[in-house]
Length: 477
Image (cartoon, rainbow, N blue to C red; front, top):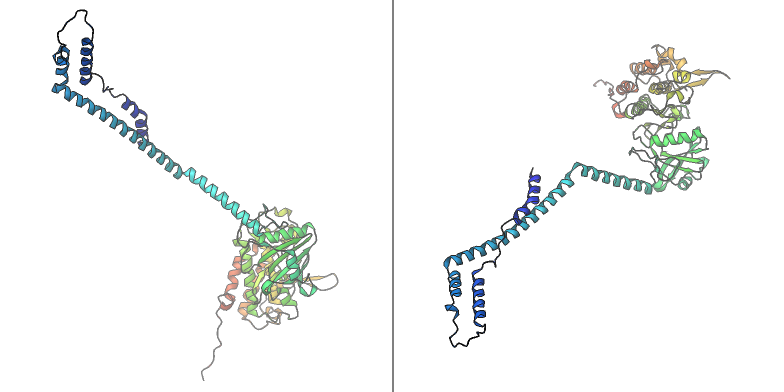
């Protein structure tokens, strides 16, 4: 409403001002008439007479015309009228000046209001935010390009395949640097062997040790596993998931750089030279708890959930404090990323769930089955599949299932290293969890969160559980 009123004043104000009565300051001025009368009388006196006359010229004061004009010019009424008209002219000039000043001030005010309105309008904010966002993305993209943080596995520069997730961004590392750090991939630096290559220990600057997995070959499976591992581990950050520090490519050779796990794999600890002697009963339960926490992160806290598909004792690594971490995500898939009917059957015999092996049905319960097999390894100290004869193999699940439910026989099949070192009540509880996890029917298996809650009360507080150790009772002397 105020804006409309100002516009009306701007449109019609000048029209009102310029239609005021016009006043001519010189018109009918008494002094002008007096001067005119003088000129008339002088002209009359200067006209030559045909007849010679010696009569004197009449003076201006004696002229009738002068008398009339003089009376008009010197009358009090005439003087008041003259001053009144002069005041009117001055007022007109002042009004014009003030009008122009007011119009200028209103114009400036309108421009200021229009500018403020445009600056504070939502559209302007959206444009500013859009411009700022584009500028920020451009700057961020450029900085990532400079530092080489592309997540596209096969390219060393920036690419549209960069992941949007910012946690644990992985850097592209120089191949020559890693080659030198592993002593040109010397055999003495080998930590283990996998399906597509070996894992080497490498020493970087400042005496920083890492593990380097070397994948050789250009097969589609090798490329897919490499890409999957980089893309997934780049987004994950959890104390029970192996940390990927970097990667590199050179022709058909691909390198993955991990944190170094000083105690190797769980498989090596159980079936190596030590035969599990470094793993006490409570330490084994702590390892099982770590594995369950890692799987819970994949199943419950990743969106979409991640199915590992290759959980086994050789893919469970132990650090210097025997804390367990899941590794080798080359076969992992994200639920919903592809049709499970078209997934190629993959995994390790003895750990693969029966519904996946027979019908190709894959779910998070497939990982729960594999966890149950690992739990049996920790409990019994036996491999998941043992060779009986030239063409016959024995499954740990098939062999142990009837004995696990027999409380009298269960203590006799436990790993000799830990036999008679645990509370039998806790042993029965762990055996019951293992039996549920390896059920043939997926719907009968618990979720990994339920498994986690079952194990926490069995692990001592100092190892991350809630079990309070009872001190032995001593008699007072």
